[in-house]
Image 1 (spheres, rainbow, N blue to C red):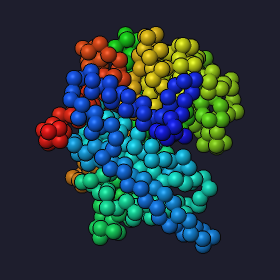
Image 2 (cartoon, helix red, strand yellow):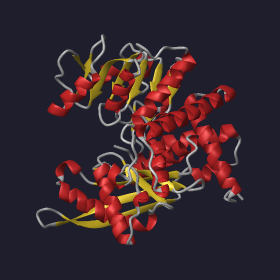
Image 3 (cartoon, rainbow, N blue to C red):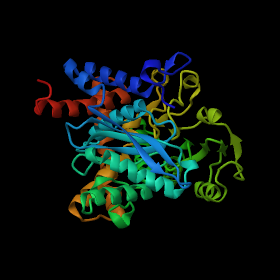
Image 4 (cartoon, one colour):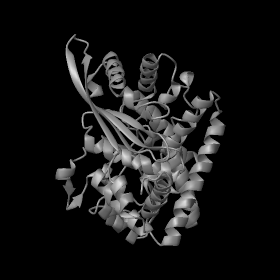
Length: 427
């Protein structure tokens, strides 16, 4: 859960509020670039946050009022872009922090987008499909004034998927009186979705691991790889890493993990989870806790779960040579400093997991053209974009003698500041 800014959560003295952490990184990057203070003042918070309260008819005939948000951080480069999550812990602090990160992800990849993020406070696990559909449509009705293909383009996030996006498209199109498929991305292919979108985030993560390995002179073939989190991103990242020749020795989910130093058959683990609802109990592997998994002797660590997993407490014991952050904010600032001091190569979240928004951009472009690419074409374009962006950040890190995380923020903020300057936002 994200703490409020007024009472930022702490763990062993570490500030864990993602919004505060993001602001610290922005300030550091602005200072390192020698930019005027106005850049930080504009970027330290979203330009717009909409809070909506809307009624939904439940299956038993009762009416429940839900609260939702849509944050738009910065639109100097283009319309806002970012996911919508349905979760009990959604908060205004969470969406504004995530909208800020989206601005920088898009800027790093050179996408013509600013950052957006949305969410509804609800528990989908306790709702029927019909209730989720009515909630989705009511949320779109409530935020319709601020979204659109030229304004703000939502996408899937926690507890939302292609079906939810289809309901969003249908409701927005109903309001407008015509099909507006470009209003969201992550849609089913039959109504304008893109080939390759479902695997895009994980594919981008693995591509950054490959690029990092090149810089370190390390072979990806046989590299012992650990993946924390076995959801939509983690499971695909594990599968793609194995397909690239890595030896995936451990994976985990919230209930526990699996460890086999000889390597796991990831497709078999996926099939086991599909049948059992969990990876726990998979034969041919030792059980391992999430805490122990993070400090296994390995070459590559992919945190793909939730924020604040790598902390000052476990950072001294992490043995990975490369960490590619599939999750948002998995490393606290204190842990980041420790890991960098120890020479661990960290691919920061705003670069590592930007494959999803990159292919979302491809989907939006295809919608605007009404012309669609094959999966191979999408994957080739993604690979080129991720490799180019990785090298841009790496070159910034080398030339300015800063960490990859600092360099990523510097690349992003330099681009956004330039757009704000030429538009006259900085005076």
